[in-house]
Image (cartoon, rainbow, N blue to C red):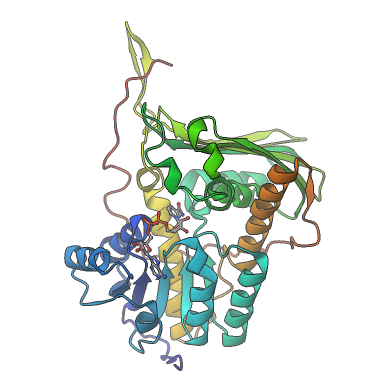
Length: 387
Ligand SMILES: NC(=O)c1ccc[n+]([C@@H]2O[C@H](COP(=O)([O-])OP(=O)(O)OC[C@H]3O[C@@H](n4cnc5c(N)ncnc54)[C@H](O)[C@@H]3O)[C@@H](O)[C@H]2O)c1
């Protein structure tokens, strides 16, 4: 379909279609419906129609379909949000681009650099923007860390660290057999790889070395499960980074970053739900966050608000600027994730210097009209842990 260019001053809400109504798709749908005033969710596609029906019912979305092509081809939809399983991402980006739609796509952008490149080429040819779901960049504390780094607080970066510990239970991982091989690199640590790339501006990853195991659910290792991993990434500026992940942190959802350099250190993140700490006879305790949609509630909203602003600008014929995090960022993070898989398999470091490219310069953040509601308040669980 042809993209309809509106005149400047077009105040109609941006009309979005969601592809994939699962865990994160449902949360993005809710963000659009409740927290992004200049956007509207008009259609939902999911081959599991009951998932689309249930979400549409909750949010009052009129159009549902089992076929993503219906949303992509709908002339009344301005842009699509892709939250399907990763194996469909590149194909959906390419199809949406050919239909003239801007795309917000969850990570990873694809399963191979080649298929992602094809999708990005289709987006370039169509002149549409593709933004990827590296939400940590939109978290206030991570964004502040990047500003400090830009302002010289760490000097020349020498050591970087990024970690993801997914929340767990005493029973371990509920269905380890349902976690596809490679998930810890392609779907979990890919956030850390993007964070490390982003917190080391002006440098690109050159060498990747990974060690991984199934320590939480060893019985699932034969089926390909890896639930614990450490990856070192060496950068073109000489900095050495460590990314680590585990699928079963009993104390909460723990995401942290650190950049250490010639002038100092910036550290960010942690699982505390707030700065409140109780000091009692039992010890020192604070509540922790248990879910990604709570820890990154505002960041998920802000990344979509940024995407919507870009779509609105392009629709109105104004310069939208390149989407950030965009194709180069998705590609670099994917290249590191795929290299980590190869390194784990071979036991050897893997060179990614031929694949990784320098990140796009960060555009100035535009003031947004976003009115955030219900900030980071719901669903925080008390653990009463001793510290
Ligand atoms: N940014 C983040 O923090 C974050 C968090 C969670 C998930 N994710 C990513 O989002 C994606 C989805 O993850 P999830 O946890 O929501 O998965 P999920 O399994 O809960 O949901 C996926 C949904 O997509 C539907 N689906 C299957 N095939 C489809 C197709 N061809 N087209 C459209 N929909 C299809 C499924 O029926 C399901 O409803 C993954 O790539 C994941 O890595 C990102």
